[in-house]
Structure formats: structure tokens, C-alpha cells
Length: 397
Image 1 (tube, helix red, strand yellow):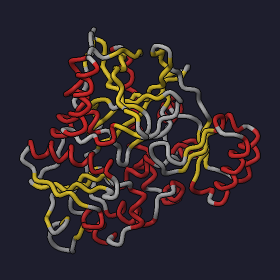
Image 2 (cartoon, rainbow, N blue to C red; image 1 turned 120 degrees about the horizontal axis):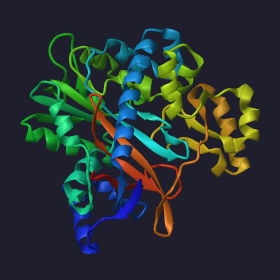
Image 3 (cartoon, rainbow, N blue to C red; image 1 turned 90 degrees about the vertical axis):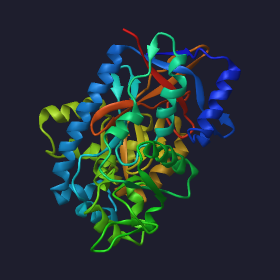
Image 4 (cartoon, rainbow, N blue to C red; image 1 turned 180 degrees about the vertical axis):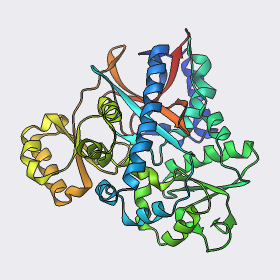
């Protein structure tokens, strides 16, 4: 794995960024006044590509087994922190195989590490699609693997009109839905963009968004937020009738408490448990009786909310001053059921001129099959919304 500069002049790169922003709806190319698109490529070898894809496909299959077991066992399900309203919807869902997931692989001295699973509403559609269209010809001696747009379109549920549901208060979420709406129009599929609160569904008839009947729904709204909605009954009826991508049952895999559950309970067989443990850090539910251990060994721990995204509510002990770490643990102790703690791991930087970049190799799977990359890099070793997108390419054999 290495970082290489794209074969592009600054003026041409600036034109590509404009195209990315206005044609591909990537409005947040600049964050905090800084461009978050690198004029470079993350180059991986064919072996690294094969290993990363094989790893993620295997993990995806094992997580499917784990989720099935959890959903059959109420006492295990209760430990994952899923809001009661979301559980109502999960129990009503129509079973289907459609899914879009992403696993972010972090390079360490002992191999890949996956600190969390993006199974509920993974992002990065715009960059993955545009990266192939705009940057593929600018990488010498390598090719952009996978085709997210084609994988998505080839795996669509049947129907002539799709509902695209998102958190309407966030422009970043709208940009994800607009790029998907563009793809669907290419296939002759009508779309309805709406908030989840716009869904209505009676006992009879099809679910409707803003009054328009829809055949299936693509959801870009965090599952744990469903507890704030007033139309839970409508959602329960709707998910029993049509496919929702991703179904809310993906919260089982999204919950970071699942990391602790398979270590504490006979959830999986020995081989499957060993596979998950190989690629994930040791995780335990936050325990107030172990707070002194977390406090005295802060460099060994990372505190996380069970549900959180883009680095939200993540505190890394080794980067946190002792007084702040103590205060953070005290806050977590007020609602310990909402937190987990993980063993910290040290990511490896990739040299990039005078600096080192820490990459997160994002592997997309659509219906369990490889669909492309959405990778980011930063200088701190902690991937947040301020990390930079970097196109991923595989060396030519």
C-alpha cells in the first residue's frame, strides 16, 4: 500500500473538483475551509485487494449468522442498545437480501483492523461513483476496482418508483440521495425524496411518501433516530410490505455492543468467533466497576457510544489529557448502557512526501458482493468527517 500523486495539473484538478461538487453533488468537498479531496491515490497491490475483499465478504457472512442468532434471543437483543421504537419496526420487517454496507479497514502492524461496522446507513456514494468516473484515468499503472453505481443498479428491488428517505436537516445527507436519484433515473425509475416523517401506510394499499406510492425505499437516516418519529405505526406496516435498504435490523450489526456480545456469549462457533476477533479490537460494555481500570490505563482504551458515526462520541485515551479523560468517564458512568470501551490499536501511516497519512480502506459490498472502494486518509490516525477522500486503485498485475 502506498500513496501516489495523480497525473493531473493543478488547474485540471480544480476543474475536476468543481465537477465533483456540481455534477456529483459533493457539496462538502471543503470542510472547515480546507479541501478534503486529495490530489493523490491510495495504491494497493492485487494481493492486498484480494485479501481485503475476501476478509470483508467473510465477515459479512459471519455477521449475518450473528444477527440471526441475536434476533432470536431477546436477552441478547436487549444488550445492543437499540431503541424500542426501532425494535418495533425490526420485528415487523419483511425479510429480503438487499443491502449496502461498508467496512473500513485500518492498517496496523498486525494486519487489518475494523473498529466498527457501517451496516445501517453507510455513506460515501458520491465519492465512490465520481472517483471511478473522474480520477480513474489519472492513476498510472493501476485501475479503480469495482463499480458501485453498476453494482447498485444491478441489485435493485423490483418497482417503478423508489422512495429516498434521508435526514432533511443535513445537506450532506441530501447529496447522497441526489446521486442515487440520478442513477435511478438512468434506469427509468421515478424517485420521491422525503423525510422519514413523510411516510404514511394504512392497513391496505401501498406505502406512500408525500402522498406518492413507492415500491421500495432507500434509507439514509440513522436507525437509532427512529425513536424521535411519530409515525412508527406507518413504518411498521410499510416494512412488512416493501423492501427497505437497509432494513432497520442492520442496527444489530451497527451496534458496537455486538463486539462485546460475541466475546461474552456463545453467539457463534469457534471459527467464526476467531475470524471476528482477528479483525476487531477487544471490546466490552462500559462497566462502572471497571472505571478505575479505564482511568489508570487510559492509553490502552477508547471510549465509544454504542451508536455514533464519523468519529462522533469517540474519545481516544492516549490523545486525551488525563483530566478530560476522567471527566469523560464520569459522564459515561451516568448512562453506562450507552457506551463500550475498546482496546486501543496503533494505525500505521503511509509515507507521503514529508508527512504520513493514515488510510481507512473502505470496502463496499452490495448484497454481499464487492462493489468498490470509498477510502479516506488523515494525518491524525482518527477518521472523522474532516478526513480526506482519496481514490483507491489496484496495481495492474
